[in-house]
Image (cartoon, rainbow, N blue to C red; front, side, top):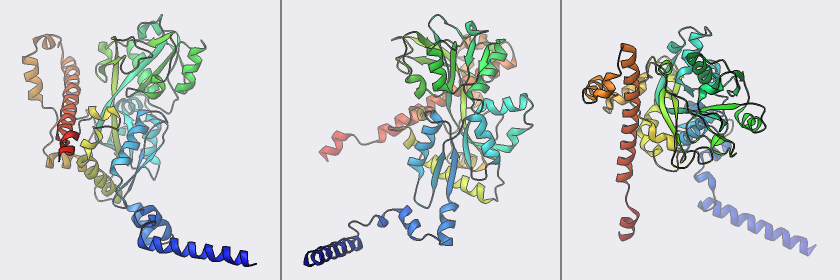
Length: 401
């Protein structure tokens, strides 16, 4: 009995000691954790309102894709207690994200491909759908990856063969089917999740796998089999109105591209999009809060450990056929960030007669202007990243101080 009494006394003393330390703040996580504070105040109407008022939800993409990594990066940098919380949601791809932005009550933003809305309209699935959307910014260009046997050298050689174009909720199938149609190709299309499709190709059950995503794309980079490689997609004229030229290198995919070589392909822009809320609504207010924080902290994303594709993003880059979120445009105007101007493009043509000679119609000029915009946006983004990097204090300088 004495022993039990002694143990109980020790336990009480320890509990009192921990409580005292917690009061001093030494071991009290509630001093720094907004989440714990919210839990302690569970049931408070004011707490619920505060948590919901400034939480912005973002539908991203499938696990392992670039969209998910961008969503995680945004949450990491922008979360600021109850002032702003970015809540990324794992999605199913570009087509599903368009539907989620339109119909899910809790979704404020989403990452979609620029050709998805065009596809939905051209195929008669939706009418004037772009009027229901605004864009915060063009993000980066997503490269088209075609993985096939080393006996295949060009996408057109896969005509009539079995090609996986990912699941029908994503955006890869939209891009792939659009490209097939414009090039006059009629392959046997199957809809299989990318990782499973790569294994089926390895077993000889299908001939090729198409993946559309920002390089380096995780599932593609992790695929290793000496019988397969990345296939060239030529930047043919039928593709130039909606797509941009791109390259994939051994640095991006050492398992699929020989050292020192590059593979030509095409790319499609990814877009940070939102529903076209009226400016006097609470949903619009939350988007404006997000924009203020995102744009102000944007240089942070262009440094490690964040995804290398952030270095391609230029906030002011225009997006043909889309209307920018007014709050985003107002921020750009206030900070004097202007998109690529036509006069600079005209000057570019004057000093590049080879490029000018390729223009035979207004459509050719528009296609070349789009390429010029993408080139200058990437150049500006990299220059901005270099400027931010140069402003960082050097480690040796810090040590001397």
